[in-house]
Length: 223
Image 1 (cartoon, rainbow, N blue to C red):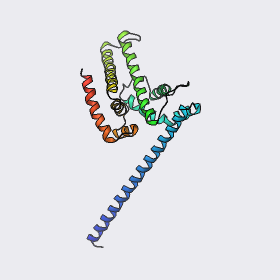
Image 2: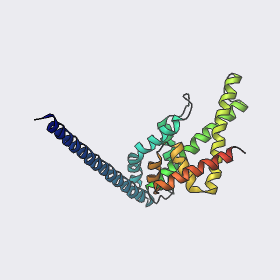
Image 3: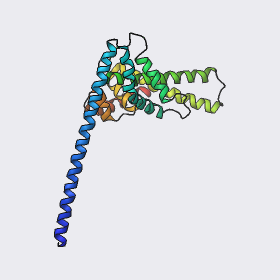
Image 4: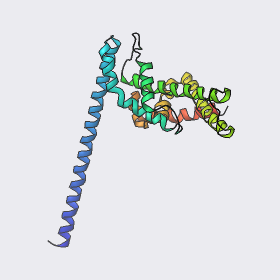
């Protein structure tokens, strides 16, 4: 085989390999999306059972959503201090008890999207309550005080978190959807595409909401 024919054969083979790879990636993506949609439908069905008062569904729900809740918790704690006393498991457990208390009369969830958005909000509230308690201790005593310089730096760090939380709460009063986008993307670490999927919105809408929300938060924090 001459060099020209050999090069042509290699080029053809390379082209076939690329097409095969593209096809395999497309099929893999379809499988992932299909599995995700099935999982989300399952969670919604379990939530409906919980809403109907099925006590066994509460345990089933915990098993089904645990990995997702733990991922949210790890992302939230990643931005906290290394010496933070709350661990991901603690955060998940406290969050779940707020969302699905052991007693009857728990909130009614229309779908998995509402549930996970509420979970993100609940974890944010737990961490902010922790920050407020820490600031109160450092400002008013309680435990053995830290050295003054370290104490002040730590207090300011927690106070910045509280300021951001208050700004986000104000944003929620102005535009609840943009507040949810910030909560899922910034606080939970979901990508904008994942945030769009969780909220049932288009990627373009979420990108636009994220851009506008950042401008509003910057204005609120600068007051």
